[in-house]
Image (cartoon, rainbow, N blue to C red; front, side):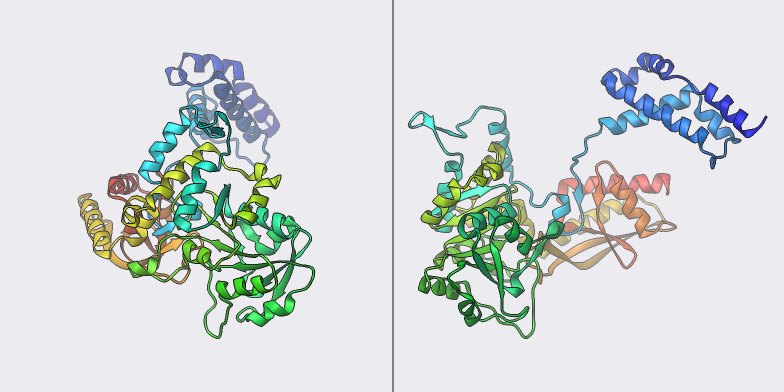
Length: 478
């Protein structure tokens, strides 16, 4: 029998979709699965087998192919596809990277009290845009504006869906078709290749760079001011730092310059913080309160970075400017929903008591956790892993550094205690891949061919997950 005849014979052995569906209807494993999902899985399984048979590069002589055409094997194939289709795409993971505000892993964790309020608001009707006092339509920003102004000292506040949106909205409102003066050294790029010049171009503002990459002086800004100037912009370089022979203009100086020329001044703080981290032995980062105190017209920053809340772009400043921003038609397109507002309000209320905020907001808590606490957690995990009693497993305690992450505090190394894991005959890359494919996924990092688990970002209740994931690797091998 020639090759073509063999392919035709195999195609005849390939069961129809209807035949497999009859078997699936008898299989209790699919009782809770929507029929559309089962049918789609069957069709894709049959089509893949057909492609294998028709592939001229595929070996059709082996027993494996014949076995794969049997009903039992096809049903196993369909079950795997159904499981994959029914699995959720957005999953909780164990963050063992030591990066506190991990952009790829969801950034800041929401405080427990904020999560409780979010759940309550989500499951009930709310006064999102209803003024209970007057019985008339209200503003969705009213529930967070007062607390934002109280904590920051600003005259007015509003919130959009992220900081890039906040910057876009402010520039579009204040400086559309006018020049925006900004230091060349502050033309930052944030995650996903979004750059300040690109956001400015989309807003209609006209970029006017001044100074040099490493040094910009007040006279550079002043020399650039013309009749076409609409805004003086300062961008805090929260995601990188230029060191060495440098000079930059203080925000207070820029505000004074703006007042002399009757020009508004805006600061994009990026990862804004309400906490002075230098009090906790970390690098000094300008706080939102300090920026507002300079008399700046507008300040923007993120809600899900150092603030430790949900994703949001927060705009604070003078009422006269904020009133204009609130009336911009873009505001509706960029507004946030009730769940974000609920989580943000509770998060901000925690800042009324700094000690409570540091204890209750996960981002602040992880950033300020003392080394000895992290060390005890690492020792606990090591003891747990040693109980696996596997001679191929090597576990050691390592003194390494964590990172703030999220484009925040780029120069700061946070001393941390980590677990280094080696398994005889298995590379660090293989361990990383297997841990990542665990359920739930365990995400770590690799240094010097050692798989690392940083205990700064792993709470006590997730230690058992790491043990179970590693035990699975040891039992099945790779």
